[in-house]
Length: 553
Image (cartoon, rainbow, N blue to C red; front, side, top):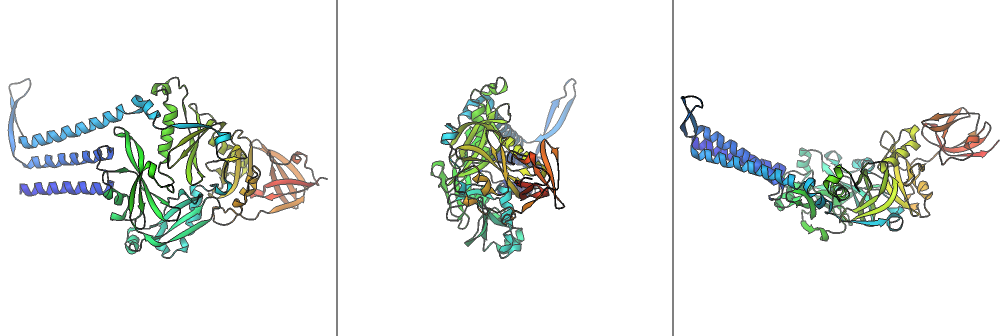
């Protein structure tokens, strides 16, 4: 009976450990913290199993003197075999925890600040002469949420629409040097997977970030490997079983320049003992065939857009600018300490995706000292020196220009037009739909130009051909509505200050129109009088833009 219980407890230990491995999938690698936590879990469970076995095992009587008296006390304790096992496991658990704690502490930035600062190298350059001129035809206008709104409208066009949804991935990639957001379809539930997994997932969505046009791409053969698969075809589990000792991150969906779907899993190795994982390469998984191949960093195919994560890039850049003079300098004098700003975005240059963000001082004021551009496949970092406003300041300035409409500014896109730096900002309404665009002068963020038509807006700042932006769609997936031009005669006129800006109220033919005074409105606006003829483009809340006085009384 006792042996039977022992066998059952040992079998239960194996079962729990197997289930734990199936769920958490830790790499069998001594340089992985996840592996050591898995080992600790096994040791703790083993301690419990042996402790339970010892309760039913043979015991020995131990007599000891009660301190401070002549009395003796007899207690029962496990036989030495169990006692030694429990002691050994306890020692192993304590040793692992001590090693993990000591490794983390001794390899922290407190002791190895300069080592962290030197993980990457940053090349300095001049923005005016070295930063690439923005290619209008490859301008990424849509952020992730906007692309998702457009892409999700195409789900109803597929067969078996009730069986699938569209993944929330919408990862930014370049296909033939054009910026896209791509996302695969996914099974809506286990039972819908059970009914359809033999044929696989036959579609993915791609949204052109320049034109806003979406396409539901039908594959010749369905994807048999994805994040929504179960059991052995789940991407993370499939790769873990093929590469049990490799440390890698969650696979992310990408497509090559021919439109073939892949999952890309970045491989890692700790930089300092067991801490600070840093990419070493990538594993590519063909989502249709299941074929995999592992690459070192220098050999990763050029169509792969993002090997390095934004968190890794920003963390390394912050370390570089923060710890050049050691840890304690960041606490006291903060000499030369800089950091990245709170907002970052991506831009496409050629066939690569670049992360950019501003570099500001440790005091985090509203000005940047320059910008960094980071290739997300190679992590080559270039710092472009240019005194400018922060991205947050640019957002606030753009929102202030249309404050009466309560639009919300998206993360700015850094553009260079005719040799000058600007922030391009999309302005969304409460429903999350892009209603207008703003260009903010990066060096003087109070200079803001707003227009509902992106082609017209960009054309004001560059001589480049802007025809690629003609007919850019909105988040609804439909072309922007035709602008209504209002003409009339001023019957009555009044004005008032709203949040620091003068708004003119024009009564004409029973309607009241509003014109907000900005740097772009005509200089003759303050001299507008009853009887004057005018025209302008009608916007929300009866505001007029591109206002002109056509015939002065």
